[in-house]
Image (cartoon, rainbow, N blue to C red; front, side, top):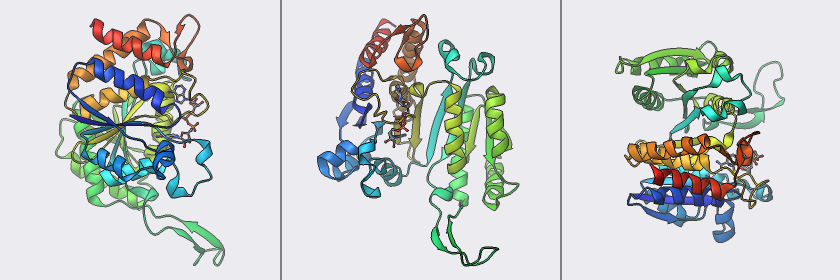
Length: 358
Ligand code: NAD
């Protein structure tokens, strides 16, 4: 099993060191190879996704990714900016399915902005289509408006589009995922207004015929945004397009109170995946040793489950994380009165200890 380790920028290297420590403590045989990505790669090789890093990612069974980005790169040409590395990896590896679990840990219920009874025990999975939709549809651009009340005025436009195979494969991913969980899929669309999403709804409904053991419901995106804050526990797996998924997955992540706790995965058709925390490179706290490494450690657990066929090892890591939270250990972002504040390294050490004790 070969894992590409891409730490990146800001807090990336700090949180990655802890995740690697946890993986090593499992006693499994991994080959781990590290390469620069993002701003670090730009400094080292003049490009955020150098050829050698891309080759390593393509050869690996899975990629564990830290975070990229720093304000100091904001003035670079777009194709040289750190964030382009993620887009490049998605494109080259065909990573079309984005998994964002939103889990509210019992001990962190108080960190949510919602009432405890609404989020206690929350465990939902948002699956976002990642390579299509209005983010990539052509044509797009600026021009002189060809018609309408403001014909001749300068305008900008994008194109929302989805092909049948793109919808079918993400729908199947969602039904398969639901089979291993609560057996319910909510497909989120805007079929009442958009042709693209009427088609989405039709294709998801057809694909559902192969999954009679999974319940399917359809929901408009505006209603889904409301239900996520009104009764989030009614969801199990939520599947949607690229743009709606972008927005709803961030909304769902906030239900849990801390972005420092949330892992994510992006998978291709071969099951190869890129695993990363949902947060960014947090330049404001980089180098201080206070970042929460748990989102990256939990991303490593997802990697073991989805790309490396090691579900028992994934569960061991998740149990160890629950245990350190139960012991009252907290990094600054999730600290509250009566708990023990620890740094990045101490948190990683505590997870390793919990793993070894069990
Ligand atoms: P961010 O997620 O990096 O930080 C937002 C806030 O959350 C900050 O106050 C930060 O200190 C805090 N935070 C984030 N992760 C934390 C952790 N593990 N522990 C404790 N606190 C944590 O988002 P931002 O500030 O908007 O962006 C910073 C940089 O990251 C930008 O350059 C942006 O482009 C980049 N970014 C990268 C990714 C990625 O690599 N996938 C995703 C989002 C943003």
